[in-house]
Image (tube, rainbow, N blue to C red; front, top):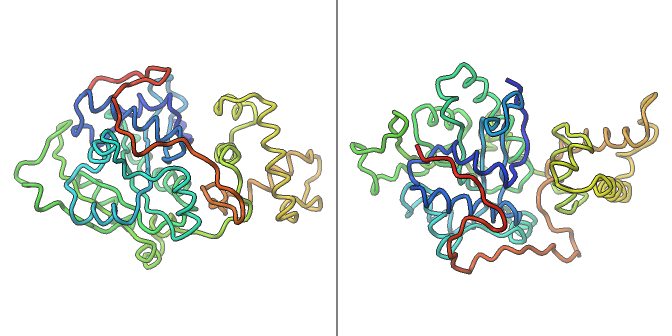
Length: 351
């Protein structure tokens, strides 16, 4: 097994659908609608999606874990913790189909992350059925902490919420520093819980606030909540490049994964270096160069070394005095459900 992390792409979503932990909550039409929602949120910058893949496996079987996060307002957080029933992913999907999505748009996320902070909701996540009970399960679970830190740290996060379903998951959540928010007592008769894949599933909503994380030193939660003010305010397209460059991608593979020409990758790097040179020239100091290393290679090494410790530079934020980037997400229009917008995403059979 050779595992790598990377941001999720629309083409991954059909395979991710086969990894759902809460798959029992969706019929076939619901699963297709979920793909449509994921696609819109991901393409518009309104979601944080990431996959863990085993590159030694053939295409179509590489994803061994995925996580899809969205951002919601304070009122919706209160609703989830005190009034909502279980299956938060299915509830968000139902609201989205009615044109009443609780998910913040990309511009709303940037504004909140530059102001009072954001609330992060793990909408869906999971791993393929073949991983349960396999020799690799423990290895994957151990990597999930590193994976979660990379794709969650750096936000000005007020609260993180996630629903868990089994004893194994409850133990993991407690060890990570999460606290129980609700067991849905007024909605669930725990003598009649759903069974799926031979296991009993009992939804429990867990969460952790910035204050709770700070009081839980050494836990995964405490590591995910680190935040500093960004210095560079990179554009979204520049952040997308840097996220993958930090994961070891070359310029050639960056061009392929981002779907752009090699010259576009070079132009984005030039723009990034200019911005850093203007605001923090010491990061690209010539005196820091190594023997036998090209200037471009050394600049990249120095910058990436800094960014590994400053993931806030890779998160959405509004630069002071600058007009915000536009987004095309319309959260107010009811959806007439259709699977494709120019392409068809394969839907694996429900289990």
